[in-house]
Amino acid sequence: MGNDISSRHRLFATACHQAGWSVRQAWLGYVSLGGRCDIFDVEAFLEGLVMLGAHEQDVLAVALNERLQDLYLGRLVPYLHTDGLDPASSPTATEALTELLAQAEHDRAEGKADA
Amino acid sequence: MSEHPGQSGARRGSDEGSVELTAVLREMGAVVLATETVETIVELVIRSAVATIPTTTGAGVTLVDARGARSVAASDALVEQTDAAQYQLGTGPCLTAWRDQVTVRIDDVRTETRWPEWCASAAELGVRSTVSVPLVTGNASTGAIKVYSTVPDAYDERDEHLLTLFAQQAAILLVNTQTLADARRLSADLSHALGNRDVIGQAKGALIAQGAANDEAAFAMLVSASQRSQTKLHEVARQLMASVSERRTSAAPTKD
Image (cartoon, rainbow over all chains, first blue to last red; front, top):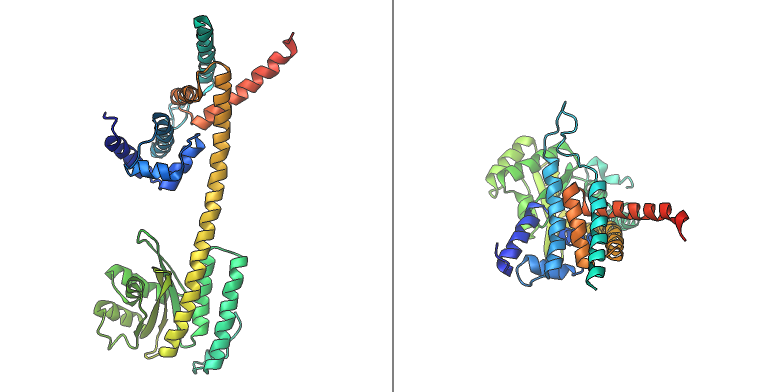
């Protein structure tokens, strides 16, 4: 996948269209996840006029992906008799969180070892 | 809306008409302060149009948004059916009024030569005469308001003028209402967005305190946990904060 602006912005603009989001809605989703650019930057990026930094692009991507996932999950057919296989139910995040904290502590320990 | 003396069908003098219009405009002004929904305004506009022009059988409002989608409100089934015919055919006096920003008056649909298909179906439904006026603010036409009558020659130039004055007020009111509703929605959306942003910021801070290299690395860790657990990012952040405060509470008694 190319990393130049023309292919990046097209990916995002398509996702935004599929998500049924206006520029304002996309920007709100991005801001809610910690995005720091203003709505004009985001709009210009979606139009292919300016490039956003890699991190800001990722934040916008998460916002769009979460929205697309919501739309997709909403269309799944729920099971009637098969417990635990409901595709719309999400497993607990506790495991992932424990791992997350452990990883952060591990990183810190490594950083100390290097120093 | 007060009772007006023209119910018998006789035309009223222009004095009475202007008194009526003043009352209508005053009522429109009061609406801004009370209930500011577009539906309320449209209903008021229709009700007032029927009351202000005595020969009128029914009235309707068509609103067209930026994407060309139409929404319609009507005072009765006759207006609904007559409008439906316009949208089906894609042409008619009301659509012309909106598109070309002109006032359109048809004195008798049986002798009218414009919009022959629509006139034929309107005549079948029992409509004889109609006036359509565009709802214009600035340079933009946001829709049209129309009145129908079951008798021919129900409207003259004075009624056209009255309806135009009426439409000017209604258009301003509708645009203001929409702007207000937009502003309210943006404010609610922003509060919601900032709430989520806050907890994500806290979670990133907690991860940095635990050794994550920087803000971006902390965000990447949250994204990875969110993907693995199929949980929304802000929910992962919320759970992380809950588990951090839980650890602190359980660790507190053993401090040395």
